Amino acid sequence: MPITTSQLAERLKQARSQAGLTQEQAAEAIGVPRTALVQMEAGNRAVSSLELAKLARLYGRNVAEFLAEEELEEDPVVALFRVTPALAEEAELNRELHRCARLARQASHLEHLLGRSAPRTLPVAFELEPLGDRWTAIVQGRYLAEQERNRLDLGSSPIWEIAEIIRSQGVRVTELDMPDEISGLFFHGREVGQVIVINQRHSRARRLFSYAHEYCHLLVDRDRTGKISRHENRQELIEVRANAFAAHFLMREAGIHSFLASLGKHLPGRRMQTVPTSLDDEGVQVYERKAADQKEIHAHDVVALAHHFGVSYEAALFHLLNLKYVSQDRFEMLRSERAAAGGIEKALRISKWDENAHWSFTEQLLRLGFEAYFAGEISRNKLLELAEESGADVEDVVAVLADTDAEDAVDAVLPAE
Image (spheres, one colour):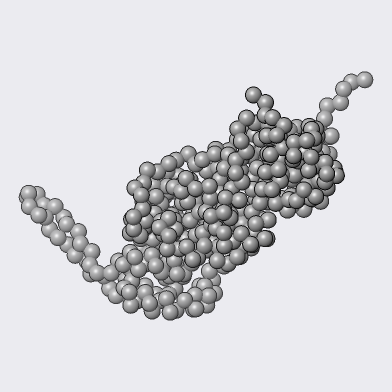
């Protein structure tokens, strides 16, 4: 059943508002007087197919959304700020997150044109008991980390490429300049898909942790349209669970044991093995007491462990405490030596992380854009619009098109005269 003129008018008004544009800005962008746009949104003026296409592109939506029988879904960014009103006045953050949502919709549209729409939800769902206390949250986080590592066949090795792993599950990932108190956020919806946004101001080790943290939210907190992870909310049970997940997803216990064993470090105390005998008795118990220098953990061990798994010095140290490789007193001493970590890395010639390696929508959107262009699904101008909106260098895209068009011209088969 076709929608009514008043329904279309309301959807146009809603989409403009969610895109953060005034009527004057929208009218100027599509080349009509402001009064014309006012009449469109009031349902007093017909909208031509060309105008509708321009408005859809401007608002980062598909024409089909405006004409579909079901209602437009609420903008997930609007929902985010509604549940986090303290950040509603962050104009730059508001603008950038709306831009992320528009790019995500563009990506969904391109995937639809190419016949390979991304899944709306992750291909797995975990049945968990409601959280009642912090210990339960930690236990659930560790359980989820184990299950997801097994499902993805990641073994116990480091996963520095965690953003790629998350992307392989149909999640869009990007990084933005956000207030320092925000580590990351997630949102999802029918048209935007699943999106994780990380604070690009933070160190690479912290960003890797945040990717895992937000991924946990997508795995088990999909009843929410989205959530912003802030320092002041770290005591919330779902935040505790996500932190426990991130810690154990990045550093699997078996991997820690294996790496430390390669350094000659073992759990303190005695190891015991029971050897069976031919008699049906309790067997023979054999103990090994390790020398102190074998089991002692030093600051350089913590640095090596942190670098191996791509985590911070503190994160590695907390794992050592939880796994009882160090006592509380030893933990405090090693924690006080944190300032020496940089010097240890230099002395050991440990390569520093490339802190300028960031993920953005540019590569993800333009790859789809190029594919759609060469498949004949979008025009050259549309591809250049995508490049500009995603923050790419348009001249670089023009150069690529010039090279590929030239190659196509050489390989073309000309008709016989």
